[in-house]
Figure 1 (cartoon, rainbow, N blue to C red):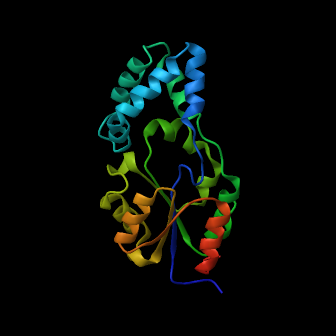
Figure 2 (cartoon, rainbow, N blue to C red):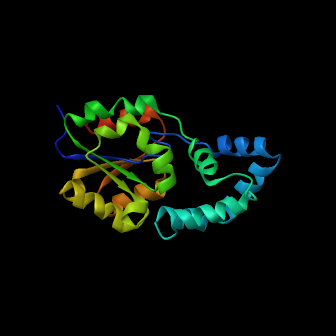
Length: 204
């Protein structure tokens, strides 16, 4: 018998539904010029506030691209950068296969720290997004996990009280933030662990 304690299942996107690996982008940049990928990722990691501000919508896409193209010595144009920057994702087909079954009994929401480039060039093409009642994307709502605001946006969309939400994320800090607000949440490790977590709570 299904557990009626929960009414909404909330999924993180990156490394839950779509694993990503920046090494793919680094290798492509290195093919353009030896060492270019290494130079880029060192700049990117040491100036991570640009990434976070872009996810939060503080930096515009235009301004972000100016900064990133300078980091690769303007060796490529904007379109090429956006493609390389976004072609880092693969599909976690096992986890995705759970969505249509969960959709039968629960509202589904996507909660993601992401940016407009990854949305346009990567994420929005995925067919599995159709299973979600709403996508809560950080750059659109002006808030990132683990800030309270972005979780509250999910609650506004669902129309449900905090304890009705069950959340899945690969980052402990983001899980802890959800729990603090009254959600139940688990850290995503792999497909089998997720299935076990869902069965334990009689969600599936």
